[in-house]
Length: 329
Image (cartoon, rainbow, N blue to C red; front, side, top):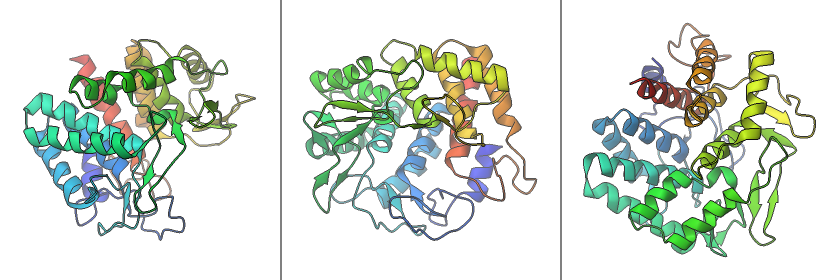
């Protein structure tokens, strides 16, 4: 149902995925607005196609990637206008790694050489241009030739890096350095830091914590063989006591900082629960997530509130559903 909603209502005319249901003008170049398209959405859709083992869907996404997102300098533009023009000269590391991960998994499924060559191309750009002191960074501006000095921990996609290592697209010392970043990462008993500042070698925390970021970091932590125990315990307690998890929390007080729930939060929480061998909790979370769907009868299958929705709040629930279904097989 959610897949149908996305296909019917969240596609631009050129096939790119719109970020929001409602059109709007961009007021901040660093934020996506209205029908602008993100490399993040494309990567999630490619991951969905791989999980569904749907080669046609994957190949359609690949055509969009090559036609619109891939620049002549071999980097992936993080944002496009609704008509597929690029007004940015930067990439976004987390999105790039997600796409590389999908390409490598698709290669192992269907053995198409073009998947591997594109994964090589993107991996090579990231490591030849977008690194500081041996670490990948959040973004590189290819016009200004400047790199970020931070690495957001949600971007340390160890699953993708394992695939890169296995396929000789990343050297072992670089992989180990990023793995150790997660293994050595402090936490405050519940929450993880937001980012690693490369020049100062410091981990930095947000005082208002975005639970989506925390869950993504938690998923990366499971790739090290550990469980995000403090975060899991907190979220389970929240869910048991209040039957919901809010989108953001204040770090010091552990109190909700916002009054909304996010379908994306539940989608990621379902996937984390499954990774941590807790299918029972995953099912409870999915039930809560599905309660947020179909609130607007005009948009069957969509997570639409006040006549609008973010693509993220539909793609992550969709990924969670298929992951849970595959888990039942």
